[in-house]
Image (cartoon, rainbow, N blue to C red):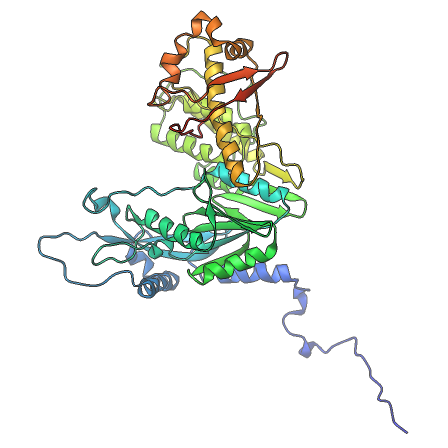
Length: 499
């Protein structure tokens, strides 16, 4: 007869068998990750040294410099030789930066050995240096498209990207950070590699690369050494990571959550874009974090004028404050008008202008988390672009000013339309809303207004070197408040996205 052993389960464990502290409680995976990050950041320096002598006092910066020099050795950046007689070498210097996550926690100490490119002479040390760089409007379009197609956007960072750019100098084989031609050399290396892997480059945005495979699409957006990518099929994203790892040393950062100062939160039903971390940083920078919040960015019915009798203020500080706010307009349309109004007085700012700028800051204090929410929707038929800018051409009437603004809006519409062609989407008839009936009347029939004869001379011919004006006709549908655009793009005309 077999004896069946009796199993007993002890519900209470002796305290000596319990690992860690009993009072600590249950640690979830997310809490453990946060604790590890905080523990790791304790070993990193929180201060960015200005000189190498300061960096050598902290072990984390020494390790960062060793990693940078190891990259130079692996990439075979240079060949050490004696300096030829009568020649002056381009110097180098160390730059130290703390890399932070979306919460402002220091996650890495980065040391970079950069060339002193300001000592280079054009025509001798370099010639062509242009390299395309994506703009934030293109990033927003990328994220909106990803939302409409319900795919996740991922991010990666190429380590020492400029070192992959090949130069033709005798002693320096790879491009160093700081050299004028380094961005161009890196872009040519990356774009050439993607081209050999069946990627096509965007016709308008030269930093957008597309790959079509079996009806599925893979999108890659480049900003120097930061890369975001996504696909309608997840396998293509995995294949792209393997492809990039085979050529470059890079860090896969998982799902996109922080890019170019934008905080991106991807959830199952959409994407939310904000800049709350940036708002907090500029409030602390200008010592306005403890101010009382305002409900509006400007006082109601408040007019700013160049009052010469008013007390002057620090011009440099005023410029820095305006510049800091301008970057915030990427995700905050509510402060665009107020900022641009204050920006008109940068030449001679007064104390009243400074108070108006400070009000924008304290308005941000009460609304730091505002941003854009893009919900997942199959319908992708609405793109919104905004800009507030003082016109460079002096207008003699409100109607003329509105007409000029409409033509600039045309340029932005054309840019967006051509940008969407790279995504495989066509927008033909795009309405532009105008609330000035005289401008609408001018659009319908330009020659019937004697006061508009100067527009061709003062505005249209001013916008381009050639005498061809790209907008052949702006036709208005009768009985509507929409300005429908019929445009023909000249082969010699390039449209600027300044609308």
